[in-house]
Length: 349
Image (cartoon, rainbow, N blue to C red; front, side):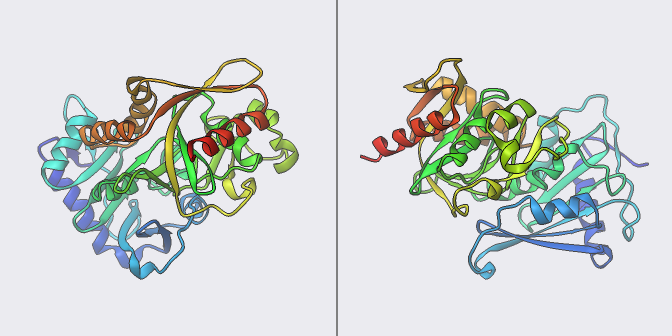
């Protein structure tokens, strides 16, 4: 198995891209996904990941000829001359140093060194490679938001950003919901959808700051742990026989509970940071930009490899553009949704 150091990293990234292009005709499956301003073409083997690519996205409307195209090869030894993944040979592995070295060469990438799982991307050519030991040797979260890192790099090159946040809206205007795990973000999104509000996604949404703050949909997957699944009444609506994912949560699709088809975008008017208060009713109160950035930026940057400095600038700009609030969540899903709906109506006046 070859070994890679920080100094040889750019050469190895270029080698992987060339190897994938050389084997292009030997990938058995081709998936095309239409996303905002982007046609994603993935080449891979049949299996769970191919299935996820067909189900995990909210596809965009419109003519694909108006979109840019990027190609991602999801390979492993056994497809053409695709090599075995290299191992990391430096004494220490730091994600920041890894990303900086590739950026100096005009490339992007990430390496899960405990899995020998490589992702490299050339944003100038819009071509990338995900190299694994075998067809199923991907991290467990990859099925819920497949190729998330490549989308992050492609959109970041255009000045946009994937945010680890949820959304809720009404009549085209919405709020961004941000917070650490367990804060109530996903439960709030589901509560809103079950009670008449719209959403362009939970977990990861595409944020564009070029004309205000706009959120656009990418992934269709929603998740709830078993207590939340029961509390929100999802057992009655979706049934009880669904397996749990790698986090011990039920995964389902936004269209299964959304009151209307998912829209192309939401104009974001505020950032809300959910807090499980234990009270009976919900309330919304202003918070500082500092508290808002703490809720929004760390997970968004940690879960999106590379571009750390640009990420902090982006989220800083975002919190300057938006008023920021804490929503203390009550105990009833319908009341939470009504509180957010009333906030959206009042903020539009």
